[in-house]
Each structure stands twice: as structure tokens, then as C-alpha cells.
Length: 103
Length: 196
Image 1 (cartoon, one colour):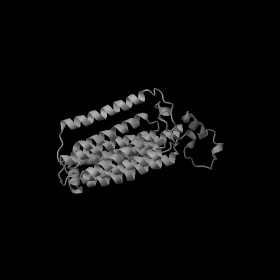
Image 2 (cartoon, rainbow over the protein chains, first blue to last red):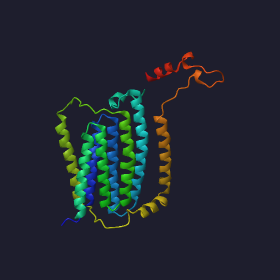
Image 3 (cartoon, rainbow over the protein chains, first blue to last red):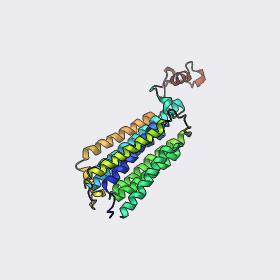
Image 4 (tube, one colour):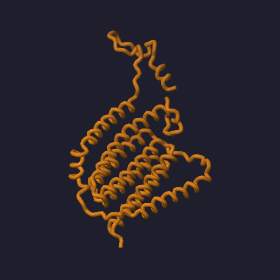
């Protein structure tokens, strides 16, 4: 009766993961924790891409996932550089301390 | 059938680890939970017959990005987030209710639209088909991605480097060595001015 997971299962799982990531970005005060929640949201979108790609037998979605991963790696490098700069200037990673965008 | 069991297993593991990412107060525990999310998503990619993306997920995300994040957490000596005073605490049950309604709506719509198609085995997820797509049709995005990586490299080095301020006395001159305390304009003034 059960013939394997359907496409909608993957989409619902992806929506749940994305929502958890959004909630994390909103309620977290630590810059690194917010950064990790953004990574979580990117991964939820990646799951959607791969699910559509596999179910509709089109390789484009998986190529896009590859590019999203590259963008995530670039974002990690630049974002962590910014985090180090913030910590060096403010001795804190709380985003409330850095609400004014000047040194 | 096996795929369904694997989906429920790794989907549940992924949701649990994602909740742990948000719930943990120590960023290091959040990072470890996030690695759990990545591993379970990689297993889900395997159930979707996408072995290349599954491998890249583990190598790039769990291997490279999370090592970078954990390195920064260790480097910066991050303290655990203290519990904040809850303002407007009466909104929390409302928020939970609205989230439940939202997820229910999404599930209902996906159920009602019913565009489920059967997953048949194909060679879409193999390294060969991805490589062919990446180097023929999507060659331009691939090259743009490499430029993006170069920009990220330069940008990260520029951001993380400690700024060196060259004052008027710090130029190179020939002559005897002058110890720093004998220079009339010490560098300390400029750095103090900068930290204000």
C-alpha cells in the first residue's frame, strides 16, 4: 500500500526545516547561531530542488544545488570574516550590540 | 517501502536536529546539531537517487563550512547565550498556534493539489549527467561561480586582516634605528581614536 515517499513528503519536510530556520534567525541573538540558521534555510531549499529534480527527471535542479552550495561556501567565508571583525571591535557577538552599522 | 522507512527515520532526525540548532544556547552545540541536519539531508538525497549531491553535501557542508564555523566558535571563545527576559510572553502560544496552522495549510495544499508522480530510477543524479550539464549547458554559471569564490577569498582576507594604519612617521627611511618610544607621534593615538 505504501509505495515509497511521495514528492509532497519531501516538500513538507523542506517547509518545516525552512520554517525552523526562519524562527531561529528571528529569535537568536548570537551572530554565529543566526548564521547557522541561515545555512539551515539554504539546506531546506536544496532539499526542494533535489526532490523536484529526481521526481521530474531533470538534472537542472541538482546543478542549481551545486551552485547554491558554492554560494553558501562563499557566504561562510565572508560572513565569518565579518563576524571576526565585529568581535574584534565590540568584544561581543550579540547582534543588539551591533545594531548601529558603524564602528 | 524501505525508502519510506528511511524517509521517516532521517526526516525525523533532521527535524529533531534542526530544533536542537534553534533550542541550544551554546553555539557549539548548535553547530554539532547542524552537522546532524546535514548528514540526515545527505541520506535523504540518497533516497532520492542523487548520490553526487549527497556526497558533495557531506564534503562541502559538513566537511568544509562547519569546520570553518566550529573554528570561529573556538577562536572567539563564545559564551553561551543567557536567558533573556521574555517580553510579551502571552504571544508565545499564539505563535505556536499560527505556526501549526501554517504547516497544516501547507500540508493540506500539497495533499489537495495531488501532483504526486512516481519516482522511477534514472541516471539523473549520477556524477556523469551532472558533469555533462555543468560543462555544456550551464558553463557560464559555473564560471561565474568560480569568480564568486575568488571574490569571497579576497573579501574574507580583507575583512579578517587586522587593519594596519600607516602614520606619517612610519615610512621607511634610511638611517639609524629609532626605538618606537622616541618617535614623537606614537601609533597608539591613532588606534585609540579608531576604537571609539
